[in-house]
Length: 366
Image 1 (cartoon, rainbow, N blue to C red):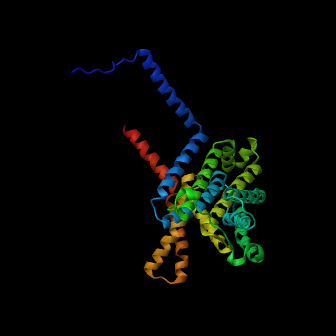
Image 2 (cartoon, rainbow, N blue to C red; image 1 turned 180 degrees about the vertical axis):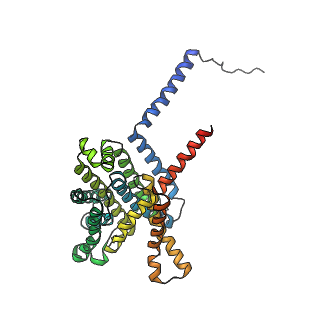
Image 3 (cartoon, rainbow, N blue to C red; image 1 turned 135 degrees about the vertical axis):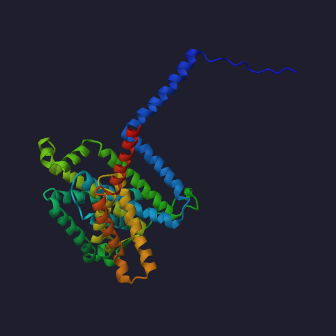
């Protein structure tokens, strides 16, 4: 018996060179594509959403609800990080700005039937405009005076809801309709998982916008004003305009975070946006690390999980209700004092410093 097979045609040297050059061109094109910050961040954001979408299906409803709670605080802290860490302004009123976004969402939902994405955008824009007006005042204040002005906002804004009960619902607040998962996601896709995915999309959008904004001339102006206002003004930078813009975009992020928090809680009431929230936001930012995206993530995780740990601790110790209500604040205080003394750059700053030390020691050993 004889068997036949197709003859093997060897690859000519010219063909090998052309194939290699084509592969090199593709790799070079991919490197060029990833070298563009905006495109790279968009690609990473899409991948992050896809991974989160898949991962959220393998955890329970309660864990998805916890992740949905992290999203609003993370978005708000990203905006606060830009204001405090990148521009050098202090705000103890971001809880009130979150309330503006949340009530905007509730009122628009009550009187219209706009899509959720449009409503979230409106909540962001309303808070951004309010933040710009507040920024005009903030640009004239410095240090403790600025902190006091923003704290006054956090103290006074909740009273508006109780004074105009017919509009804002008084102490009970307004109910918010949570979105239902689309049918194409399947019957096993829970509302908690859907909320977590919506929050993840909002987080990715804000991260992409801020990370690219800080790479532009606007971001460099933020840092120049933070480091030295006189030198920045001599360089031709409008210090008041830069500070107002920083306050506006930070307020817009806070408004979006408040709207997201209202969606998760399905309610907007004055008690949810008390001055304690504003103080907790600033404390969480300092503990996590101001001026960094990862520091905002650490702060958001602390804001969600520390009260839950405090509740578990008080149940185990069988403390009375009066003490248990302040355990979370005590933990915040202990963490804040410890971080300020031992790690002034926050958790993320300390991790980054430790990483650089390890890398430098390895280079020296080699």
